[in-house]
Length: 488
Image (cartoon, rainbow, N blue to C red):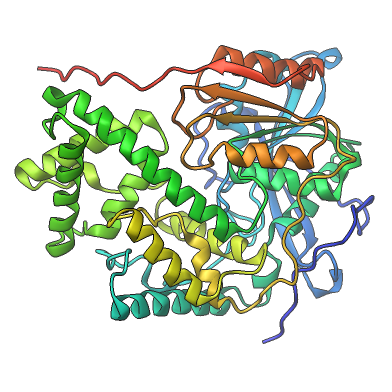
């Protein structure tokens, strides 16, 4: 099998390396999961090189969607590319779903452009097959304890890397953030725009910063929400796992405050004990396909958004009371083939973006996490698979540029998925940028998501009026939620 390194240029690219491609819009694929205003959405396909450094290697197609600005021509500000995160999240339908939440002024001013990044959705989807047993149900204990369990865990990571190499073949080295950033510029060029507006959430912030490094002269307005921050993916995953432990402690205290509602104890310690009892019993005797891996995935998803806390607490209570796991099933953003593509693309992109850890470091870090807590949440440490990757990139993804116009960064003060430190670190690579912080908030995803007027108005003024805040913006958040009163 031929191999190719994922190269990262040492300097910004001031023009695309291929002639402007054509992009014509028409009806969207019937499989596109859009329910809101489908008659207003148009879709098209863009042919791009598999490897922008070596265009002769072959080509792939990128699926692109468009919802046109609702205002008159004199209000138009250009195009706003949007990305929902991941890595691995498709974005074709996001042009519709995110647009419905944007402030009206933004909807009137921008053509919203969605796209499936390479490796996701309908854009050369990644395929890692069984992924080393990731989809086994119930899955094995995700937190290995002891030498034999650690060896088995490393073996599953090796098999995952082998499965990705088998399934993705020649494309494996080219499904990177840097290559996707070049695809974004090809979209810009195909639409005849001199600059782009961009809204990236979570991983989308990483993608936006990579675009800024390559094409600073083509950045108009850029909003990076729930910022990943610079650095290697594996290091980010570890920071996230520690932040999730802090968030789980807040969750335990919150549940204890409503003892009569959830019945898991009146102190954080009692709730923690109930949590551990549920997990240990499921590890010993899985119920209906729910074991410790599935339990941890449900916890991982719930901790990222406070509106899911009530369901998690109720699920733990229901299991301890009557053995029901109905509320503990780890809801996924996608199902079936889409879920497998997402999980595949997540690992493929992370491992194409930079060198991975040594296997010995993976086990050492797991031991450190277990010293912090016997049951850490390791669901999000996806980049551990990079320890056995077949195509190790020579360099890491470059982020930011001193040439880029001021960027607006947005963060939740207590977001455990993308801790606020990432935004503070990335702003150092984006001169003139400003940070909007939603204080007293514990959820992932802020702009046009939390319903906060302070955040949304600051972002709308930046996008539409081109107003860069004089200083950083501080907004009051909602605090922790109040559980709903159960119906009789």
